Image 1 (cartoon, rainbow, N blue to C red):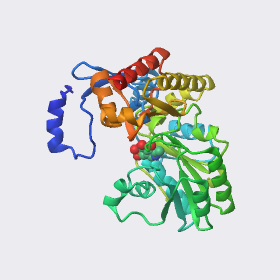
Image 2: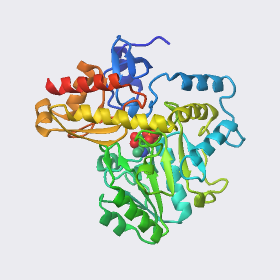
Image 3: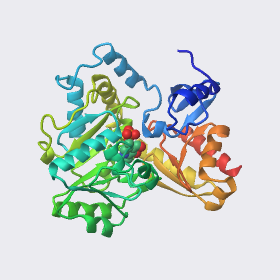
Length: 395
Ligand SMILES: Cc1ncc(COP(=O)(O)O)c(C=O)c1O
């Protein structure tokens, strides 16, 4: 299909695409490695990876090859049939994490929907506990678990049985009781600005969950698949949850998500309890195998940590940057409020980075830039990114 310039696309969108997205002013034609190529010939350094999805970079040859091979063999049949690729993927996900069962989905929100249903199956009518500034998706169950006024309020009434508490050990532990079905948390809150939860808090919540037979579920939709320098971020916390949800980077861009449980939850769902037509189809599963072939490797993950360290060192040396938090290549860059004020806002800085310095990052908090660069990023590309951010902040 002929690629259209930005002005033509905007004209069509104004009439035919529901305006749910505040789109950036670029028309993207293709992607390769860390680069996005626009229709008008620009080359943009992609330090956000489609919001944490294309972690192996664009057009990764092994992923493309796996997709093409599977697409020429079988695109779809049904979850009512046995299929080797998806079944072996479930085995791989389970064996690399909690050791129980896997339910495939098409997205992060759907993985959380599955987790919420699992929790209610575990404890009928039980309450689901979440924390302020958490983000778990936009479908009704996931939205009900996302206690952000601006996202929830227009869509009330939400699903009953959810309760949100502040991010303190006292508040979370104090809210867990015998009627709690599950606590749903991100180990590092991504959409709210790369905010890590303290491992001691997580350990206390684990103990309280055990005391009240509540499930501890970690949403690893953004933190999973190597993003934080471990295959799953919980592996660095010393706390083992009862289930994790994953999606985003699992197939480097094809839609797939999963709920992965511990062995004791293997029989919580029975046939007919949950389902999805497309979920865990053979093409997405083939892509996910190709991703795990690369990412599930100690040397690769060590390199992610080294790359994260190089980014942090470079970023914190920039005048106007007061800190860089996060793990691996999940980075929240904290800016001096005076520098932000000089530029108008952090969103304005992100816009300048895109428009004038051809680099894509975003601004999840008033003083935070978020970077989710490809896990395959090279040292010179890191240095290039740091230099572009420095130039934008200096302007
Ligand atoms: C932690 C977390 N959970 C869930 C979601 C929702 O995932 P999806 O957009 O694939 O539904 C996101 C998306 O940003 C996320 O970051």
